[in-house]
Amino acid sequence: MKKTITLTVNGEARTLDVEPSDTLLEVLREKLGIKSPKVGCERGDCGSCTVLLDGATVRSCLVLAIEADGHEVTTVEGLSADGPTELQRAFVEHNSFQCGFCAPGVVLSATELLRKNPHPTEDEVKEAISGNLCRCTGYEPIVDAVLDVGGAKRGGRDDG
Amino acid sequence: MTIALEFDYAKPESLDAALRLLTEHRGRAAVLAGGTDLVCWLRDETITPELLIDLKGIPELRELDVDGGTASIGALVTFSDLVASEAVRTALPILWEASRTVACVGIRNRATVVGNICSAVPSCNAGPALLVCEAAVTVLGAEGERRIPIAEWFTGPKSTALGDGEIVTGIVVPVPEGRHGDAYVKLGRYRGEDLAQAVVAVLALPENRYRVAFGAVGPTPSRAPGIESVLAGKPLDETLIAEARGLVRNETAPISDIRASREYRAHMLPIMLERGLRAAAARRDGGGPAYGTALIEEAP
Image (tube, rainbow over all chains, first blue to last red; front, side, top):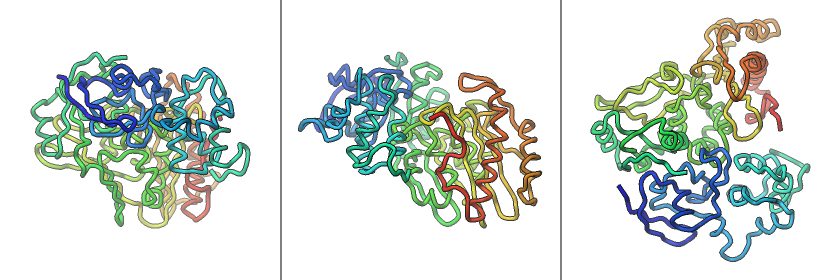
């Protein structure tokens, strides 16, 4: 029951055959070789498979590849085509990650936040990344980096 | 990792075409909107359809319209759509508050309100808010359209009044009349992505009439008629609040599960009810905490 789909992945049109049961996560990793979305809980709880679908974060483990037919998918690989973004540089500067397994998902969730809300409060940052589990850092250096890009400091004024 | 189940996929471009497919594959098709529950069930093989009917090709189901006295929420409207809607925030702040407590942004971008009540888990976020608003579910089948009052919608855990061969096209929510205020109180294990341990929704209407609904503390989200009738027409003073708190145990049936014990839920419910009542009444009267303020402190 293979079907042919065409989607834009990191700016490039890709046409491929998928089974209706193939998830977007599997297709990205196994068929297109894009390994930044991670296989974590596979039930939408951990956020490690996060990708941008038409600019909005989704769990690629909960999206069938066939649903992405005609749509635009962006992963961390696509964000950094011209080198690391300001946000990614801030993450490096704040030493925000240890093992890095959650990093692609956190980067995309924070990217989505900053596009919609360039100057988020601490509460808004925490809310935006609440679906991305990190078991290394306690989140503090992650929150600091996102706030830094938005021009705010943790523990500062908060209208959230 | 893989979904082992084999199924076919169709993305009809009209409701008629979707209904036709559903009729042709009666009992062997599943309807897909956001998929945040459905894809899990396909992976677990909780459901084993031969055909998935994806509604996302039907533009009219994306309608989110707040017009005068009614909000219409199409079957493809996501929780993120509701959170982003100023019209919903103004007209139906309880629905806006409830939407903000759903999981996280990445789920809310995909999960639909209609899907939430179709999955019909006892902790479903939209249930208590829609119950106090006395919403109705619009359903389309071979015999035409019918409207099911939300009070008759939930028939058991993961079970609804939706008939075989029917598709939910949307939810109609009447905006309460007169001066009113509401409050959505969700208790979770932590302030992030989590299903509710308990939910209390309160709508305060003119003349001290109240509507109260609970979630995650019974087989379905449900109204609390006993509490509502005790509150009706009386000023919300300490005695009345104490009386209402005392009635919670008659109106709920909490169980112990992975998220909380029965005892903890039973302990927290009267506290949540009191805070919900006070906030809803104060908001009705022009004060109270801003909508979106957490009324119960969860672990940070």
